[in-house]
Amino acid sequence: MKHNKQKKLTLTRICMMILCTLISLIILVVGGFIIVDRVRHGSFYKDAAREFTIPGLSDNYTPQGFDYLAEQDIFLCCGYMSDGTASRIYTVDKDYQSSAPITIKNADGSDHLGHAGGITAFPGTDHVYLASDGCLHRLSLADILDGDGVVTIKEDLFVMLEPAYCTVYGNDLYVGSYYYPEKYETPESERYVTPAGDQNYALLAIYPLDPDTGKLLTDKPDTLVSTCGMVQGMAFADADTMILSTSWGLSTSHLYCYDLTKLDPAQSGTYTFSDGSQIPIFFLDSTVCYADIIAPCMAEELVVRDGRVYIMNEAASNKYIFGKLLGAQRLYSYPVPVNEEP
Image 1 (spheres, rainbow, N blue to C red):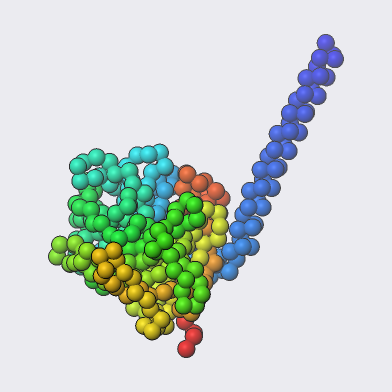
Image 2: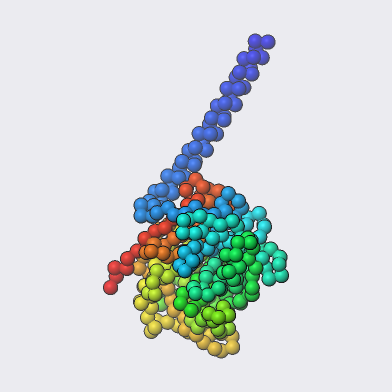
C-alpha cells in the first residue's frame, strides 16, 4: 500500500515537472518572440503612436482595407471572415468608437465572400469602391451608413489587373495588383526592370472617374505605374508624395515613401495593349524612393491624416493570433518622413 502511494506521488511529481517545463518553454518562446519583434522594429515603435482598437478581432474578421472620410470624420475598415461567412465593413468614428459589423451582400442578395482587400471612398460623392474577387465593386456610402447592418454591391467595375488595393485621389481611381512568388503571381506584362535596374513585379493603374455615376470614364487607364511586389496598400501624403505598404506573412513590412517630382518623363516607358493602343508607364524605384520605414509584419492598407500614416494590420485577427501578443489589436500611426533630399 505504502509502495503504491509512493509510486503515485512520483508520477504526480513527474507530471508536474513536465507541465512546468512546458509552461516555461511557452513563456520562453512567447517572451522571445516579443523581444525579437521589439528589437527588430524598435525604431518604428519609438516614433509610432497607438491609435484605435481594430474592430472585429474578437470575431473571425480579418482586417484588410482602410480609408478615412474627412467630410464625415470617420474611418472605413473592411476585410474577410476566416470562418467563410460574409465579408464585412466597419466604421470608426472621431471618438474611435466602432460600428456594429456591416455585412457585404452581392447585387443578387447573396453573401459576398470575397477577400475585401481594399476600400476607398470618392470624396464629395456617394461612391465607395471595394477591391475584391478579381474586380472592383462600387458601393453606396449612404447604404453603408444607414444603420441597418447591410451594404449591397451596386455594380462591378472591371479593371485591367487583379485589384488588391485601391484609393481615390482627386478625380482619379488608383488600383494596384499584388505579387508574391508562386502564391500570387502577376502576368509577365506587369513585370519590368526599371531604369535604375530594380525589378518591379506589379502595376498600379490610374483611371479617371465620373463623380456623378461613379463609373470609370475610360475602359483603359490613363496612366500606369510600375511598382515593387507585395504591395498591400497605398496613400498620398500630398500631391507629390506617395506611400506604398508591402508585407507577406511574418516578414517585416515596409512603407516606401516616393517623391513623385522625381519621376522623369524621359525615363518613362510605353505600355501597349493587344489592340495596339498605348499609354505611358512610370517607374517607382530606388531613384524615386526617399524613405523606407521598417514596420511590424502584416501591414495592410494605409491612411494619411494630420501628417501621420495610419497602418491597418491583420496580425491580431483570430486567423493569425500571434499579433495579440504584440499589441497589434491597436492600430499604429507613424509620422510621415520628411523628404530632405533636394
